[in-house]
Image (cartoon, rainbow, N blue to C red; front, side, top):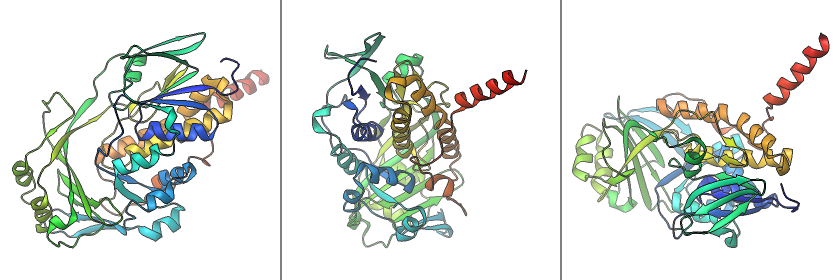
Length: 394
């Protein structure tokens, strides 16, 4: 790495994981530029769950109080039988979950969260309309080539560019993500459209092969969101989403209890999203380039942990860069992978099974994780130490 006191780091992708990485790196006094291919930041997307394992990271970034003024702190999460509405599990949340884990649980509109997170990054360090085309690494560092003809050189590059990651494709070659055989319906609408229906803050109705989860997106509880998981053998759309049919949606959930029917009746338009995943990646970095979030481990959304895993990745990556020093990026990236791959793989697997919180569940292993204080595992160092002991004993 060159003689500059602050390593220059490029983050490719201005989503939640990329912005979290940038905010934490700037706190660590690294020089960071975020490259986002969209022309502007906008209130797009759907609902998102932010559990204590990630809100403690948001507290470190300094945005937890802003979120409190925008998001919902759900009083509970309730699982119900699809047809009778019988309660199968209730997780008390609100103050109780914050007291237990030392950090709150929020539900919020992804666009609102994205805006708050973007405000934590220095505005002059976010470059919009920058679509990455290629990467060239040499003794100077890593040169990024963009579709507008611009080229810039950085010491390190972090690929936070999602399930269809260009960085991942450059490192590993083209490989389409795997369609899971399920699609999700998503809709956001005013809560008063539900005609006075009394709703809990966060409820999931389960049938043997499909589900619908409904929750509020704003602290005023004036905006509702639902997302489903529905088997669909084929996905023939060219894009990852498409406009959905309200009548087909209602038919899909025709045997669900009356509260679900009222929610669907309040909905005027819906989108459909293909659910993709990949097998856990063995390679998380190469040379001066590392990846995080969906670029490494895209997963079904059934635990509400996809964005949380990206933000955890970001925090662990920065922790490892500080642990080894950015000059020792090989060691930092190896340490990062060793301390993330098992957890990310376990969450990815549990998400695929779609059983999280359906019945009596202890969420400690997810919500209680503290990325800043969990002991670091260094298998490479342990292996070297073990080899030294064995050689010394000969």
